[in-house]
Length: 105
Image: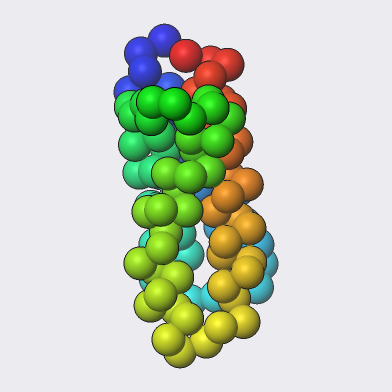
């Protein structure tokens, strides 16, 4: 399977996994769409990047938390309560995307 197509499919899955709790909690639509798009695009970035001297299973988590850091700063300026949840979701889903890259590519 084409790497781009595989990364798009994984991104759709990861984005859906992330937004299901947001939909259940009835969070604002713009937040839900933003979270979905983040994981959709981060999967493409993870699939097409390779960080030398870094274990394959760490790459997805590190790339995703690095890309999420500006959002964390922005959210933390107004409300610090959701930051640990955002960090946990980002690291777990980013790592799972990296694992999918390793085993499916």
